[in-house]
Image (cartoon, rainbow, N blue to C red):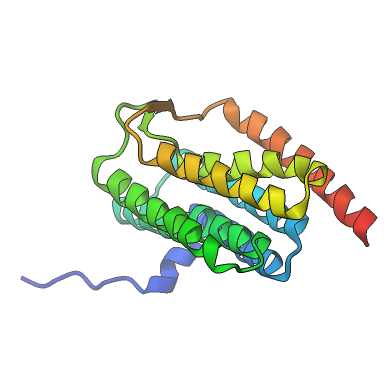
Length: 212
């Protein structure tokens, strides 16, 4: 009995849902870059688009005909790996950078990334409670809420706002690991997300323009 030849890794890069996932990863990497540079409006724009592409890769995968089972399995694993970058590492770096890389912000960054890895690992094993319900808060909600919170940054002193987002992110991390049932947004919610992302991108783009 002979084993089937394993496909090359890069053959999966041609799969349209995976291309969408990788564009989302690029958005996250740009967000990380701008967060490290201290350009938080640009970092928030990066994370917003990372969420949007994360939603669209699943939509494309479900609508695309002719995908093999192995393509679906690979796509799910790729999506999970990218999620830890977009919704774990990126918000952790935003927190660290906004806290001027103070040692006191390292535990918070660790909690955010550890929470992401635990939650994604759990989800990969158990999945949803049912077809429309997560156990705990989904990670992408964290950054959508964080983006909204950053709209009010100018109302606070930098030091005060750094503690504020620290507390918010710790509360969200606790909700990520909780057993509270939360809805899985899909269907027509994608249009709400598109409007949200475009609106906040416009707002933060305007902030960047006025800072230039």
